[in-house]
Length: 564
Image (cartoon, rainbow, N blue to C red; front, side, top):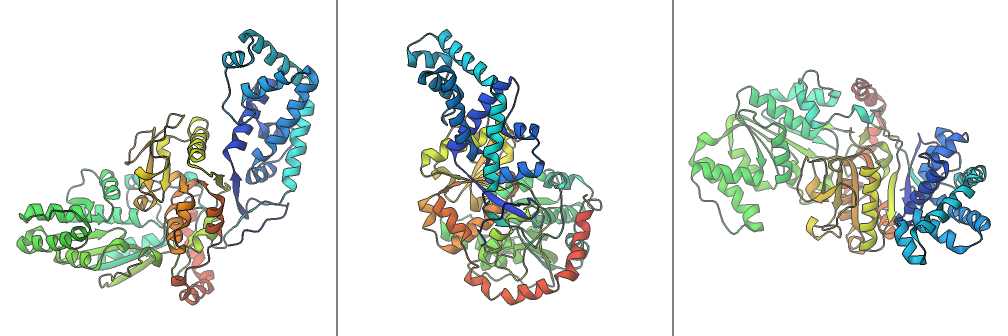
């Protein structure tokens, strides 16, 4: 991982840095902008003043990558000095500081300040207004300070991640289609890539097919599309996966589709056993889930062969055990199909489970969801013969907030949601908060956010509901914004492969913004990861694939251009 600093002639198109923040500096920046709004008598911020003083968009992007909040402390100090020069008392500075939140705390009301300083509320208001008047006479000086301190920040070397040579095309975020939108389109008009179109055209000719793909390559939408295709043709079809939450969500997308059942593997075992009159094993522990439920499915099918399916489609097949595959194959009619989709990352299959024999195999190598700025982080977490390719560039840095305690995590999370939901353009349901722990044991499990959003532990389409989920349980889902929490000392005791899996499962789930709340040492460990031992023997195969990428990439890029 190259974590070196770039030179001052930063270009956002070839450099995707990480912006390091802390809640205190961000709160001070917000306080400064509240004060500037009062001084100018219009909605104004640091960026707007820079634009009015001739700053270009490239300069603004560069400052965003270097965290403009870093200049807030210096500017606030000089503005307080201006107030002290004009008014001559420390009390006036304290009133302005607390009323606008220049100290990084939430603003204080006039009545509370009157009680604190033992004066009337009207007197506090008069002091505030006189201070604002004195600052209005020095607006040009304030603008000069902002430009000066911003220029100093620009001269610093930004720290971040080098962009990826694996970028094969650009797909604008507005052109990313959700699963719901794609399913509303006719299959022949949906914007498939060449890889996806080839699979959809060829797979019907085979009874045993495996589709391998990286995160964000469209495995789930292909599974849904094929399931709907076969069910619409009158064939009894089941789409199954390991996660019950994912199965419930997929079922809601194709609700009411005849001849189609969508459920988790264990729900499938349970339902078929009930239909066949077979007793379902009790004492639901690991042995029951891993061994007895698959045996129950096989017994149920043997007792009532009419329950067999024409087609069985499996999503996230890397989570399935060997005996599960045997049970599923027993549930297929003699001329039926078994199609399964698996992640190509060998780290996601630590048990090295054997997959069923196939007569068709295909690979999806383009990540259509994640921006290329995270390619270096995902590269060391992706153990595959083929490197992951990217179809999107995104000029938005990852954001890392330093949080040393659980209380800091909670206060920073509230601040982040104010920025995203209250002041931003997102709804609560556009954001997911992911943790490496079981959700109910997260440090923010019972935290109440200050804005309209609220944390829930089950998937919901309500605009105000933000999902709090364990990272592993979020596989198959995506959100516009992902917020990672609980990256603390307890997280740091995980071994390197566990951290690689966490990074792969979480960093590949956002489409627009990734915000990380955690300990600096944990972040340093993440960016210093080296390729996993289990991936080193794929190095030669990856190099061979890259050698012929010049022939492959033009064909792969072609469908991407259809979106533009």
